[in-house]
Amino acid sequence: MVVAGLAVRLAVIPFLYHEWLDPFVLEHWAFGRVARSIVAGHGFGNVFADTGPTAVLPPVYAYLLAGVFRLLGTYTPASIVAALALNSLFSALTCIPVFLLARRCFDLRVAKWTGWGWALSPYGIYYGADWAWSTCLVTLLLAVLFFWAVRLEEFGGVWEWLSFGALGGVAALTEPVVLSVVPLLGLWTCRRRFRRGRSWRLSATAATLGALAVMSPWFVRDYVTFHHFIPIRSGFGLELYIGNSADSLHWVDRGLHPNHNDAELAEYARLGEPAYMARKAQQATLYIRSHPAQYLYRVVRRVVYIWTGFWSFDRAYLAEEPLDVPNIFLSTTMTVLALAGLRQMRREHTGLAVRFVIVFVFFPLPYYFSHPETYYLRPVDPLIVALAAYFVTERFAAASPSWRGAGALTS
Image (spheres, rainbow, N blue to C red):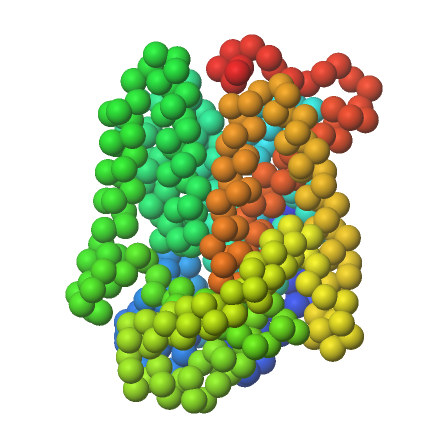
């Protein structure tokens, strides 16, 4: 599965990597700018322009990309292809944890459908081969952590819990949104262990210490650099600002972003990053308070968009987003199948179903209130594929029921 998935993704790269060599794209590629700054010896910074240190982005993927640039040159065709190939590898490797998860929770038949489903997933292929961002890495990490949390219900000593927390810290430094779900997955595991009469306090403490050990150096760096605590990233004020404006055509007003607005860039340079982000948060909050009905309407639209891909059929909008129509079909289909699988699972095993509900409810929550992007929900896709595979095999296959009703995963 991994080999086939990787081969498909690598085969797509030659048709798409040229887009990343466009000077305009390179100039506005945030991770690329920061990685270039690191390689040039200017440190972790210059995310929008040559304005010094930044905390707009988390560090893990930026440093990985900097390593690629150091080996193969900054913004060279070889480095762009290598970055996309690395993401394709992360995407293909995700077959392993989702296969193991499905085999542990269901059976080998469902596991095969899940693994192959992810290997040939259109989202997995596209974002692996054409998206030089942290998406594929955090997808892999979230799938591993989800499977690991399930496994820790029955197995795992202090060192395994410590490692679980440390990997959660790495995932948070890759994309902080995982902090909305990984601690809850760990707490749910602790609750399950408590109900079984197993120890959980030492386990929870070890996981917490593991996460803090990994994340603390970045917290210290941000505090020393900006003189106040920053929870990994500093950019939420800007995201809230560009997602809530008078522009109703699109889900985000990119014209307000420093990458596309000289006045905003000048304000960012003049105020400095912390003050600028605080000001954007204040402006966004004032707009929301003065337009509460519009904000509520936008939140509802964001929920619909995240799970179905539908934002608008307006011609001007579709001219900007020509792939929305096929994406609506694919996204809606996968959501319906996953929810059907979740409903079926709830009847058989509530404890496992709760884990999926935790991810589906809390992972996209920050995006409902700020703004969505097409790639924001992609780290959840392997779990959607697993539930869809479970529903399809149980609903249509002629084989015996796949549910393992005994053992560690019984209700």
